[in-house]
Length: 457
Image (cartoon, rainbow, N blue to C red):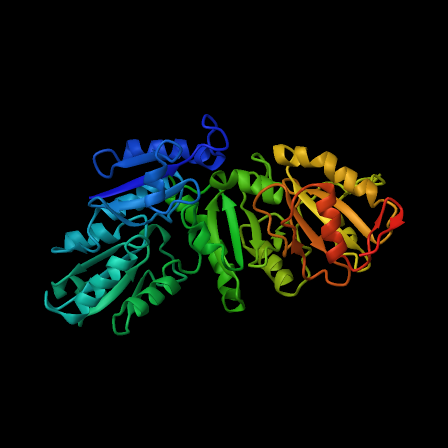
């Protein structure tokens, strides 16, 4: 039997919950209720049971682990939403590959919301069946597998010898691509994984919170609209078909396509693209996000003939589009010792090739940032008379953080040396004024002038 354990901790005070643990808690509890009787979900508080957490090598929180028959089986790396946990763990509870005995079994298995991988084999002693089951045991967490040793079940799909077929979800059936794909290589875990990975999503998949990480590692155009494959599959495919029709003209140029339910990504669209919940009406809102993090939005209204999308893509590939950058307005006055940077002024201030720049990325609600503020201001005041060095800050919740600056928590501080703006360095030192000054003396291209007096190294 499978169990999913959530390893929790309360920091820094015993009665204060870890923020990430607190965020996960309602989804975890909802999933536990829905999985009751199928997969038990449990949790451990590491402040109360440190020996237990230490025994399983837990160093970060929350950590989720899967146990099978009382033994630590693997770390959970699936989605952290209630739907995602339920979907993921139901896969864990069943067999690696479902055995199909009748045609009705096959039809029921492939008529699913997700894609299906089905193997057709000549008998229980087939060597290729053994390899298929081995591959299924490795990949079961991510894909649906089934097999049969009745070759007649595959006749209607043109199967006349041992074969593996990939069935894309019926709801995503389209005249622009095949719904069933044939795997023609010798079965190994490696070859089957590559085949599934390269083909499972097709030309224009349905982007969800569960598959977003797999899809967003590429240059991706996404059309967001009122998409609902449970209540309105025909209407959901209306706009998808138009995306696919236009996208097929640009399929060889390295851009992937997807459609998504706007309501599933309201917060992201507002935060990343400035789109309010009531903006856009019934028409799709189209974005492009590249692997480098560059963002573009289609400003022209999505026309039903697809011509506006076609023009948008032509401009994108011709390099005529202006990148979308989330930015606060550039301050009219910026004469204080700590320079305020926004996304629109980042290039001018931080990437000034003549200046050494120390920049703090902060969040207005961050307690550690508020504690740092007076020390950071004092540092800036001591270096205010030095024309070669800039002490700056940027609200990373209201502005896009440029490539090269990895901001996962607050405050995060980087140093961009004059003449080496393509090599920013993360500051890892203490947050006292003397520590910052010592660091700048060792890193800055120009010797810092502290309180108006040039200091020797």
